[in-house]
Structures are given as structure tokens and as C-alpha cells.
Image (cartoon, rainbow, N blue to C red; front, side, top):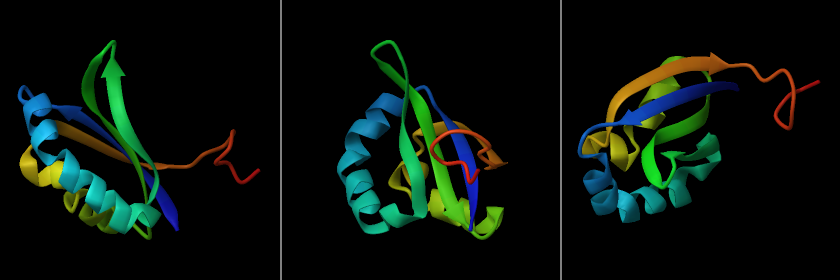
Length: 96
């Protein structure tokens, strides 16, 4: 299993869309939480500006499917999404 980091920046109406899909988001993570190493909001002061998700998958295509199943994706919360494979070298997630 590999790890894929998704850096998602909110769009102009991200706060509105987040508010209206938060319950569905929590239900999604309760059902599919095992597919995530970590997931949470990115903040600047008090404002939420995006999300960081580290998704466990066999390849990037599978990780992207898991991302696209998140209610925030369908609701249009995120304006831009950057994805890269993540290989932890140090810290709690490292293998060494």
C-alpha cells in the first residue's frame, strides 16, 4: 500500500459548501476512514482555506477515486487539487 498526499485549496465559496456538506463528510469518514492515514482542514488564522488528505491506495488512480468519493469533492468545495505520492522518511509514519 502506498500513500498519496492531496493538497486541496478551497474555492471562493468553500466555507458555504463545507457548512452544507459537513454531516455527509463525517458520515463518509466514519464509513471509509481506514483508507486515510490523515485528513483535516488547512487553516490560516481562524479561516479554513483547504484540506490535506493522505490517502492509502495501491496507485494514484485508486487514491483519486477515493478522493472523488469525498462529499466535498462533489460539492465543489475545492478549487484546486495537487496530488503526489508521499514517502515518509522521518517521524511517526516512517518505516525506518
